[in-house]
Image 1: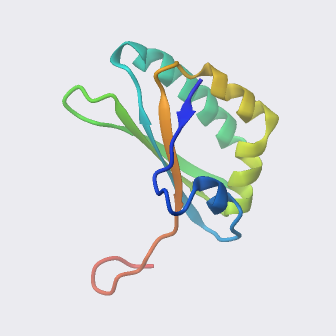
Image 2: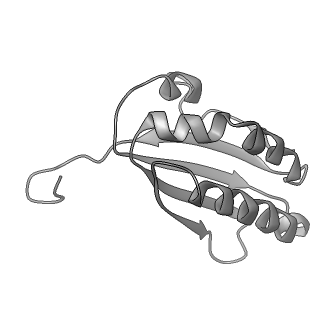
Length: 122
């Protein structure tokens, strides 16, 4: 089962799930033992297929570190925190967490896009 840690100790993920904003970008950083990468990918694929069917889901992209890294980052876009909260709170998703290999750790966090004049748009 995946173990969770906070990405920002000052603002826990549970507090973020209580917000009412959108759209949001969800980042989840995973660390996995090299011998368990295939099992991690199987579990992540099942969760991805589940999320694609959820109201408010927009898109996701999984990234892997280079040079043999077994660090992964999931970047998902949701219409709102409420939509994502409903998906991650569902019994089906909660039960799926046991599919992840024992070495898996996850650090989830929710973001919103920022506009920085002359560099990135809103």
